Length: 274
Image 1 (cartoon, rainbow, N blue to C red):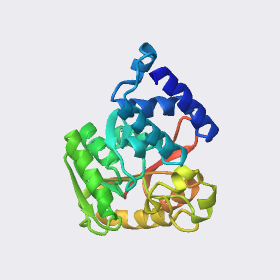
Image 2: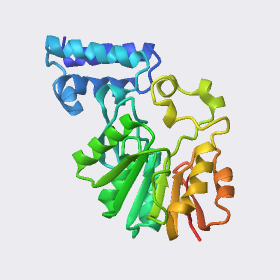
Image 3: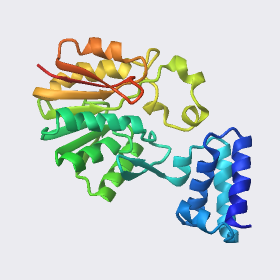
Image 4: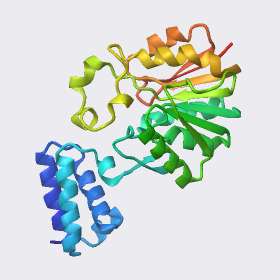
């Protein structure tokens, strides 16, 4: 079978299975199966696949049609221009989280010590260390996630220290200039309405935050003043509909701002401790 034929068949299978962006998904998985860049397929559609390549490609397509996210099949996801390794032990980094990085670079670039709470893949921690040169610490309740984050930081040359603990509990008082977090914020009541790729494959501990979705925000905002130095910043990603609740939690802080995403939806909350 040629590359062109393999892609045509794959697009049809993915379309029939209701997979969004079927053409792009087919090309990404074929690139992973063959070890070639996607542009190669357009230049050489007549190229024959080897038996091994076709076997791998068929398996990847089957996994994707069963709902497994493409990123967990390839083990890769780009974030802020860098490639991160991802496994089902960590949430897949989203482009929306890049707004957290941009907010940090705008208001808190000079922070000397930074803490990323609930680091997951380490995308925020590693990116902030490389972009700012700060001393960066990260926490996660999952040992498996901490291992993924450590591997990503090492692969990228980012100096990140990682502690396994619940949120900020292992962090000493008055030790940080900046606390950032992309915490779980999906209400338990919204579970049934999630895409199956999210609901059935991504780690539950990284998704859900109690009946309201506010549980982790409440705990982080309550404990952040203990670990922040005077004038330190807290910057968190916001789930849809969370901005009013988080804004109320931060009402006693200074310089509160809500940063919208490209659709105008509040995506990041930032405030300074008094």
